[in-house]
Image (cartoon, rainbow, N blue to C red):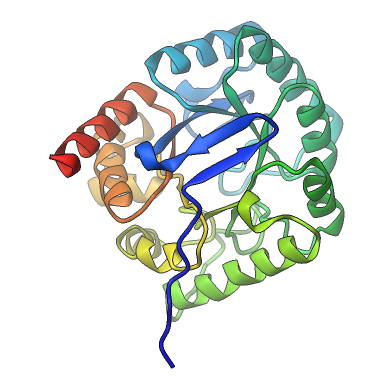
Length: 286
């Protein structure tokens, strides 16, 4: 029996919105409405600061602004939904007033996603992958918006407590398939799903490097692929650099990810990511 690869959707359309992956990778700018995200320069703890930062990222070439109010760095504690709502909803509301940009809400909580969508967000990005959360998955199915399902073992507080893989890619592929089956069983359409292998979320340095090299294995699952590499600790481990000095490593790793099939790259440094994407497209199209 031959094994065929399912071709991921190259365009996602919903509610008058569109993501077109035929034009090269989309750039997702990270907007942290937090005082404790792992990269201090990314923190925008007030509404005016966050709106100004979003404007800067759009000017630099961001296609999507990903708004998050809860840090998911290794060892972080879960926060109260009310506090998270108070952070993200006013920012999303204000960004929506400024134009027609795609806005994603980065949350593990159904109530936060619901409020964000009601106040101008277009899609949901969740590190939980909706794992066993029928309520959250049902909410997204009813809203009929794209969802990014990320792979993670454990939770942000525990995920780096001695993660172990025998065959990293095979085990992750099985676990991502389970996330997809759950989402589909809860009514989420195939054409609304994007997958994220979860770089740095319950992985060792060698796992993260292997994931980037073997992204083609995840593309074979048949869904658009997001990669979140920006300034993460595995880059620091390879280069022996603190978070503020990981831009070169980030750009280099993102080049490899794009060449290996990433459709969306989630970054702190939008200008550099946009220039990288333009150069890759110019070279590959020549």
